[in-house]
Length: 300
Ligand code: DO4
Ligand code: MG
Image (cartoon, rainbow, N blue to C red; front, side, top):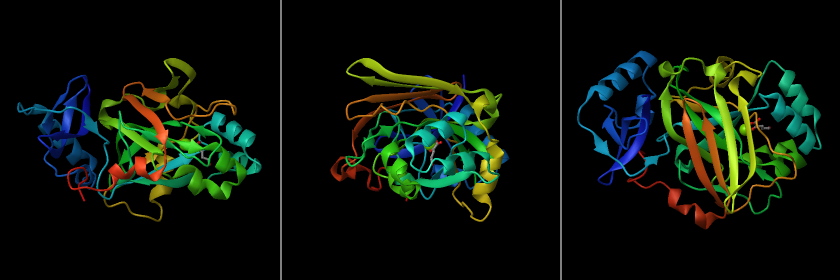
């Protein structure tokens, strides 16, 4: 059984703990938040997880919260798989920027979300009402501590507007950052439990009115870059005192005539990591106001 680092609610209070996969009870980790955990070096995190796993006192939880909190940011990289390069070239009026970045030494990195805007497993994701083509982007996310060590892995859905980015690459911020555009979870799998980060199977399916309307799969072996290289660029001229999540790009993109729509359910699975399921709703403000920080939900 794999250990999962989780955030959960027990008796109305938020805790960080270690869950045994397939169960709904966790032991508590000796930190107040995941952000605090990510201030620590890898060997200390490993010791704390081992200590928590040995505890006999278990706390039941109804559901897991997104595995990110406090001042930890979420960043993403793009055009790291050949399929992403060809899809961007098809959707964009400025195709050459994608082929150039695919081949360049410097990767594409962009800011994706603050922690409090992230939704978790079983929570909604959003599509913009001013976007004609929306897509889920199933991605492996690296969880890095303040030192830039990869300490764990999770799933990210980098929900995006293809039509807004396609119109002009300078619209990337609006194509990538809006209510419900970043889902993470369900848990963080410690890096020492993963035997080969370059042979993880990634799959996605979109279910509409009970039918699968799009599905796809890839493997991290198809990645065009090394994970350490992405982390090295991210940490080059910026510090992340509460650690950072770095989503590593999508290798699965639907045909241009597919549009993610309100009512769809998106399931992203990564072998050894888990399954992230989200229902699509409108990104209109009122549907995501519940995410606004509240002492019961967020460790600010
Ligand atoms: O600029 C394009 C972003 C691409 C992306 O998010 C990805 O490849 O996953
Ligand atoms: Mg992406």
